[in-house]
Image: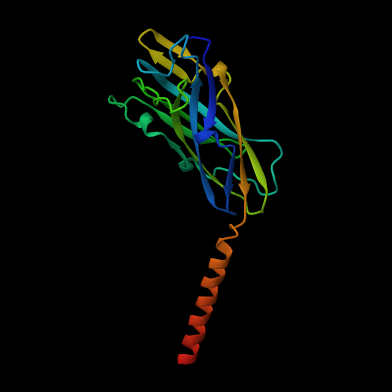
Length: 212
C-alpha cells in the first residue's frame, strides 16, 4: 500500500447536515474516498485495482436528543449495486443495526471494482459508493442527532483492496466522518399553499352540506 493516499469515509458530496421533516425519512449515501498526489503516485482505488470488501458502520454519537433519528430496520440499509453483481455468485452482503440508532453494512465482491473517474476540478480523488442508510427523524423541531461513519470492526480487517499483486487492508488508515440529521418544520413557502388547500377543502365540505 502506498502511504501517500488519504482515505476517508464520507457522505455524498461530503454533506454534513441532513434536514428532515418530523417523522420523515432521509437517505444518507456513504462512500469511501481516496485523495492522493497524482504527481508522484497512482490511486489505489483505480483501474487495475479496486475495493474487494468493505465494512462500514453509521452510529449515533454524542448526547441524543429527546426524540433522536435512527435506522428503523435492516431493510433501510441498501448496498450499492456494484456489490450485487458478482458473476460467480460468491459475494456476500450483511446488514445489521447498532445499539445506538445506526446501522452496519459489510459487503464483498469476488472481482475488482474500479472506482469512479475523478470529478472535474478534483483530479486527485477517487471514490466508491458503498450504500445508502435511510434514517427516520424524530418529531421535535430543531432537534439534531449526530452520527459518525467509521470502521465496522476495530479488530477485523474488512475493508480490503485488491489488485494483481494481492490484497491490502485499509481499516487502520480510513478517517471517520461526522454528520447530523436535523428536524425542521415545513419551509415557509409551503405553509401558504397548505393553508389554501385546507381552505378549499373546507369550502367543498360546506357546499356538500348545503346541497343536502
